[in-house]
Length: 265
Image (cartoon, rainbow, N blue to C red; front, side, top):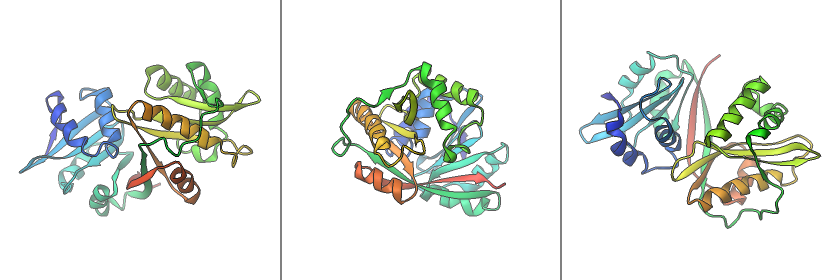
C-alpha cells in the first residue's frame, strides 16, 4: 500500500534513501529543502511486510519513483490518475517495472547516470572560471538562448529564465560558474539538487564557435572540485559518445541508467 509521508517519517525515509545517495539525489534534496507540507510537493511511502519498501515523490507535475525491491504498480497508477503528470522518472530497474503499463501515454528516454568522487583527473584551475552572482543571471539566461539543445529544457522567455537563475543563486539552491570572452559568457555550468552528500551538475553549455577548446572541461572541473572539497559526490546525466568521452576522462563512473517518461505529443 501507499501511505502519505509526514515529518514523522523523515528519519526512516532518509535512512532508506541514503543507501543509494546519488540515485536518490532529487528525492533527498527535495525532502531536505521542502519537507512534507507544501502544495507543490508530496511524498508517499510504499509499505509491505518488511516495512518501508519504496518511495514516490511529486514535485509540481514531476514524479520520481524508487524502490530497492518490487514496485507496487497498481496503487501508484491509481495515484497518478489523480494528477496532471508531466514526467515520471527514476533508475531503470524501477521505471522498467511500470513502463509497460503506461507506454501508450509516455515516451521512454534513457540517460547514463554517472558520479565522481575524486579530483585526480580534473583540469587545473587557471582562474578563467568565474562564480556567478545574481547580477550575472541575465547574461547566463541570454547565453542559454543560443543553445539549440536547451530550447526544450528552459523557458523561451529570457526574463523568466533570468528570474529562475537569479532565485537559484540567491537561495543557494545551486552554484553557477562561467567563462567569458570579450565580455560575453561563452561557457557555463551549474550545480542543482544539492543534498548533504551530493549534487547534480547541469546546464553545461558552450556557445557555437567556442567549442572543442576545453572550456566545458574547465567549467565542469571547477564545479566538481568545489563539491568534492565539501565532501560531496558530483553527479550528472549524459548521452552520446562525445559527452561520454569527456566525462570518463574527468574520472566519472557510470552507476546506472536514469529513465524519464514524458507525455506523448
